[in-house]
Length: 342
Image 1 (cartoon, helix red, strand yellow):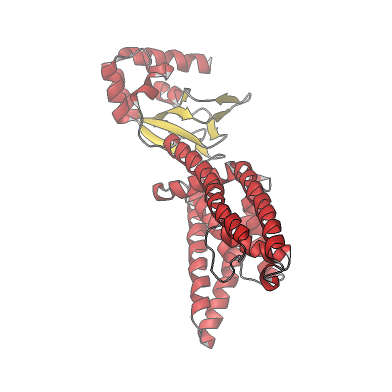
Image 2: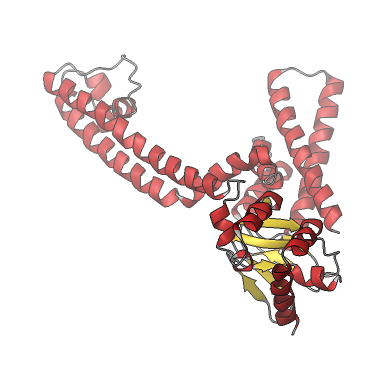
């Protein structure tokens, strides 16, 4: 089932990319009657598959997310109004499907950063809009009698105000009064500061998120994990070379009950849930997966991600190698496994 989900999701992702390419192609070239028929058939089949995928996601997720609503809008528009070709908006679904690919990590991180900082960005834009209104009203009163065609109303003045605040001024409209020129110059400098502010907010938050998802694991981070805190620095260095960092999205199963135990997982940030009769939530610094390794049995519980998390994976072979050199690690794991199984 897990393999089918992965295969189907990848198929949907590639189909979305093909639809985006097709949308660009048909807007550029005139198609013959035969090619047009093939093109329309491709679009109909694609959107039919997208409709099936949406029903499957609704059944599986049991809730409406923003991305799901956007996808529903695209499909419903095609089968009902079909006024505009909205397939390009499904590219966000492709980003979601391929979110684990390293090359797309910065893109997805940027989108999530924009969403998390939306209130801060909106706050700065409200300030910019307020300044735009004030500037437009002032320039309107100064220039309306001299240039009624350009500054005859506040709305006309706002066009000049936007061009000035964004410092792109076209040169087709300029104030003729000295005071108007001074105020416009001030507005240009103010525009630089106002539009630099949201850029600074985004850049700071984006850098912080990228650092959190950095695939390098520091020695300090390892020593803060209880399991390794008593080991010598030599062991810590060796562990550092064997850990495999993973950044995984929310609502994904790391492994399922009955799977083969092949690794120990450590949570660097985020949280996971152990799906048992009374579910347990594990957070930063916790580890899991040791029970199956110690008892050499199958996984006795399903572990799912509650939020986007960074995990450090230590394979079974690497763990056995470390236990041979540092027996105390085995004792700690054995104690942990016994306490969790009762």
